[in-house]
Length: 342
Image 1 (cartoon, rainbow, N blue to C red):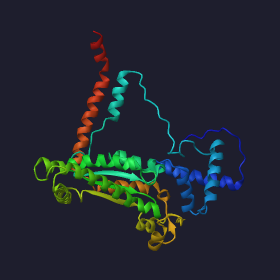
Image 2 (image 1 turned 120 degrees about the vertical axis):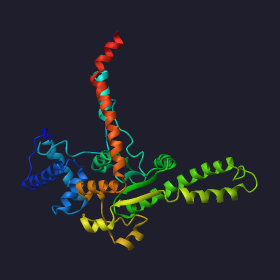
Image 3 (image 1 turned 120 degrees about the horizontal axis):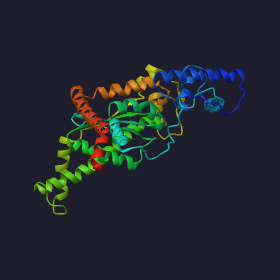
Image 4 (image 1 turned 60 degrees about the horizontal axis):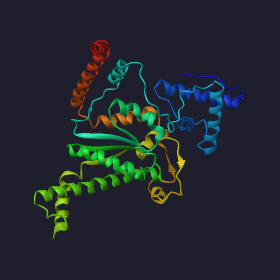
């Protein structure tokens, strides 16, 4: 881990104690293979009873961590900001290098022959680093909703999911979000809007099929609307209605009781607050407060439950054959260059 000194700074004994506590948490995360955001670090302080759960304590911790990193007391590469990223084109020294890179990155669709197609959706971009290892290992798309998902992204997702369903697969969205009035409602919102787009697209497609088969009058002719509605509703009930599921995996109230993350006051300005309070009370809980190992186990277990292990293993073996073929091509690139020059 990179502890680099940039600025001299004198710390009081109380602040040095906070720095040492932060180092314990950072080292614990590193041993598990995780980095963490400032907010995750803060919630670890709260859950261990080292500071109260208050905004001013969060702000104070941020200042201490900033100063400690500049002074070389805490590592730079273990505390990350997942909301800001540099984008740049990749480069290689030789054509053989790009072939070798292709071998390392070659992936087949390991879910192509599965009965179910899974995706993992998370409320917060800051948690991508916790979820991406499990999702990449198990070839499951990971989508950061950043709160209520934009209409553009929900529509694009519906087009993607529709292709899976047309190929005969069921679809399960594994949704992870905060346990608060809006976080709970986001699961409903995702499913409702996905179903709207899928339903309307299905109506257009199946009605056209019915017209071509002569089972629905041509569009605009007498009786078209009534017959189209009857025809499409029957087809949707049979083929589509039960083939999309949005599962809320965390935080659920049972997990709140099991893992006991530190609570926050639920926002009483949220339009969903009264309904939430009637069911759960005045407190809310953030997904960031759970240990990364807990979240990693939750997502891996959720995906495992959906997999046919034998089909997945067969797809992995086929993928490995492709990797080996590309590696051979990279090693023998010099032979190809000689042929091209001759």
